[in-house]
Length: 193
Image (cartoon, rainbow, N blue to C red; front, side, top):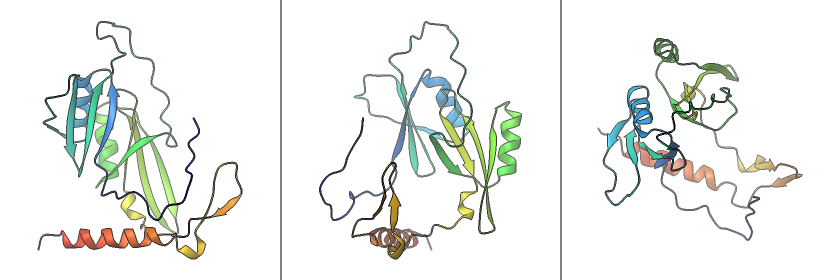
């Protein structure tokens, strides 16, 4: 499936923040336990109108919605396929953490497999730890706050789409800088004094 955006636009959609990530799982109970005990999420109420098995969890300003996979036969005791290798370039959810060394030590205590990576940029180092949840979804824990978020200036705003030549970005290239500054201002106003 190849999605193409056609037509012009003035601005991106009016988003506020990430609300939740929804994940299909073989066992809602196993996945709930993982997200509660390993990552510190708390179980929250979900709408009673849902007619399927699932659970909602929340922490760190967003939610994880677990949905039982309807294609999984709960009475089939065939072991789950071996999870794919832990690949830092694969799709993943990333969380900032306070102590990467402690993360690695705790994962080892739990007997969980993980891989590490180190990202360096202009003398700044970011440590990353990658591991899988019970359904093979990859999770990253890192000290990513070490790398500052620096908008690309509109004077150098270009990108290279896959299999295409370099094109100029939309005429509203400075728009993201304004959005980021507005978001930063709102975050600063929300600090409790």
